Length: 93
Image (cartoon, rainbow, N blue to C red; front, side, top):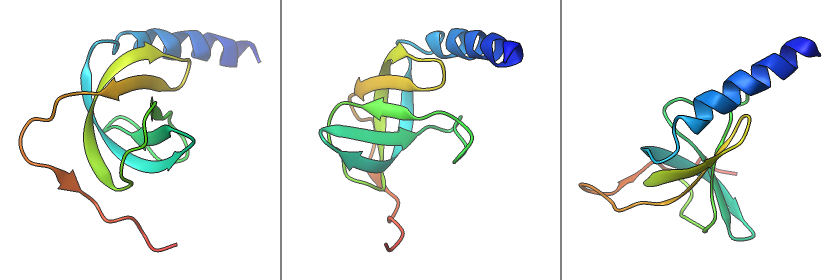
């Protein structure tokens, strides 16, 4: 338990260092006005998520400016695009 508390502090500080940065985020899910995705630094099922308070197309890689940090997740807003749009097809459900 103590070790997890220490890790939460370390993780929060690392995430806070990303505030203001722009990350490309692969959108993996949407709902209730919120998009959930991952950046290059997030492995599925073990790392945090990037939360964007707008619904974006699943499978699209979008530029996100990080505006807030949580212990394990980042919060951001859609940033201006550079270059052409990229899309990764969503797996069939």
